Length: 306
Length: 306
Image (cartoon, rainbow over all chains, first blue to last red; front, side, top):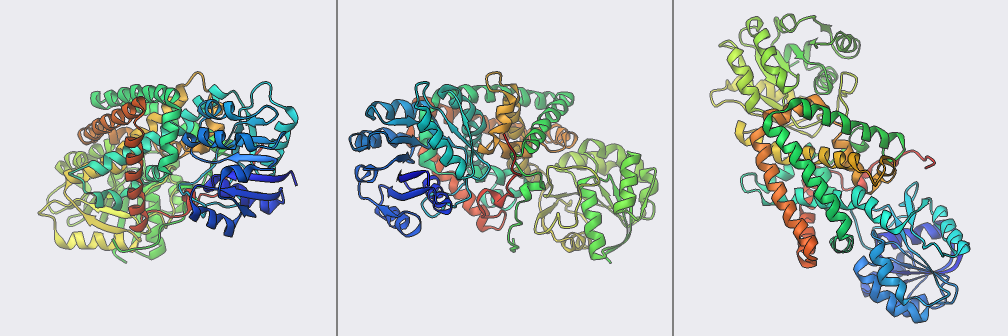
């Protein structure tokens, strides 16, 4: 057992997967949960929480670890509510996809003697809600921590121990660097996927049924990403605005260069560009970050008449 | 047996998968192959061709069905070479991802009495070459045919029979409509994926090793698409220029609207947009065009130390 009592604030995919993993490993003495919705609380009580509370303040009372697993935009209000009720010496972490905005929103509300260690598990699926969690979500995935320089070393080591016991790999980095890295590897890819799906949705000459019918040609990969939780992603884009706009600007430039090469019929440019990007895929497979199986080893869709 | 002799011109992923499927189903009396590279011919002879020839002209002699499976940019020269050697009454099809350019390049070289039925199997993986093919590639996938109005009904029915026997579903459509549909569901998604991977490749502040290390956050889905065959994709963009530029233009507009919403902090717009795009994913799963398993049911990558 790594923590006596763990309080999960917010009970969606991330928190429920943590609860399943902590239960499977015997990592927490008691798992207490809180979510805004009574329905979510009932599901959590049934599936993965030892106890649920009607308020966040109650849920954090006596907890050794408090995990803020609500959308980034809701972190500040929750922190203000729980601040006075935190146990001295407790650790507070969060699982938000951006870190500067969370630090700004949460840190002012935490009393001295409480250790705040911002975190970001880089794991998820396109599903959300308390029924979508599973114990192996964090297996072999990265979990980034962005502790302040003055962070208590013992508190950090203990949190790292919990995360590693759930199967994840921990890296620590600077808050600002984190926000830029995730803008490149996650936020802008999501923005682009949402946009491409939006374009297809608007097309008049190509009916939506054709777009769906023939989606396996590449488009369907985008739709999986674009099916992610809307509230979470709204908050990501509102709170990591600077890094996202920076990378989106670069993307637009790059796209115009490609577009120009297509318009000018510059085959040499296109071939060289498409060859270079291939190497990155190889790097990802060699680094063990994705399967080498064709088409992700994706299970074939069920046979259906078109 | 549906055709006595089938000639495959070009022996990459698509042709080799056809050969494997035809062999598995006993659909062709003899499978003859030709490819530019001697090495490819040797692999084909070993793995899936009954006979390989040193020239395309030899390969098509006496064939009842000729399949042009070379990059779109190479179709015209091949058609000019084989035209005089085609058997009267033979059917010629191709597997190019664009159709107008192929019709323009190929049709003028075919003698009267030969049936030309342009085709496009909407199946593939990020791998290429004669060793990448497998018999089930076409199972439950769409194979579009774009026959001219005056196309021979019997020749069309026979080709359709072969394709369905390989496990695919056939739709016929107009050449121009085909090129627009695939621009939306395939060509522009590929252009965008290549561009996003290119942006990541250029980033100075985020090292390439970080991009690879943390790619599972969404970016790795793009890299799979961007690992596709560079020659094939160069030709796609050069030959489906008008439709691709049309859709890319719409994409850029749409992206700027999203970018503006992020800059203005318009959370309502973002939330509504991200909710709408979710419905398309549901439609694709309901239509049996993708797996509902989280993360594509993707096999977990091998455990490795970071």
